[in-house]
Length: 84
Image (tube, rainbow, N blue to C red):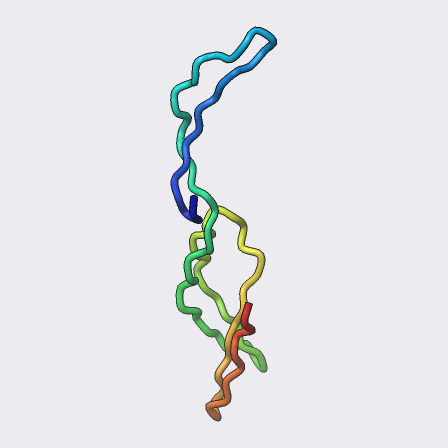
């Protein structure tokens, strides 16, 4: 199985006398995967700072823990996103 695959489950009950028949398939679920990319950020000037906002992307089935922001200043200097 790979990240993002749809999975379903069947159950078997077991006691000292043996095993039951298999149940029918339960409702499927997606295995967690990497999140989608956020939408392009919007910048807003607030005095001597800039506030960035964006729309949260689909989280891939697992809560997003953090965001990294890459900045390019007016002189063309880049401050890259750290590599994972």
